[in-house]
Length: 186
Image (cartoon, rainbow, N blue to C red; front, side, top):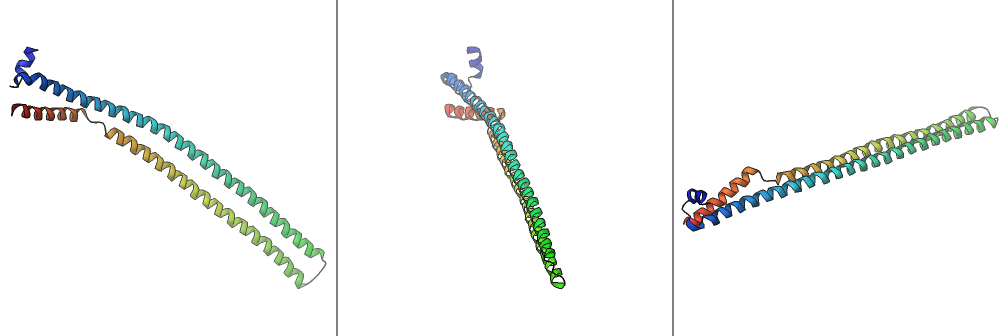
């Protein structure tokens, strides 16, 4: 120890061992902090992977739910259109069965067809609106999923940015050593 301490004592006399011990502790503290920051970043990464899987599962489940809802709306609309067509045919059949003739019958038949067509068109418009709403809902789900992903990535980036570099640890140790040296030699 005398061989190393002698040339490296830097004129500190009996305080040299304390100075070197402080330098070593500063370095060890910096390295321990770096190790802890790396462990925290790794933990953030692992929990973000789990959260991302959860976000994907939620997205899939929500998308399937609104897809099923649209399928049900389409099936219901098809049944309603068929019912309106049948009602229109029944109304025209009843008008023809009344055995009336002339302009009045033609007007009544045209009115029955118009009412049936209006009802089917109303159902078509509702179905188109439901389809557009489905698209908006899916886009909203995608935006929500992407927002979650971006937040998770941001958390990971922040965690890894908190890890001090080896260079900064060495520079901080050197700066503290110089400060201590200046204080001890003053």
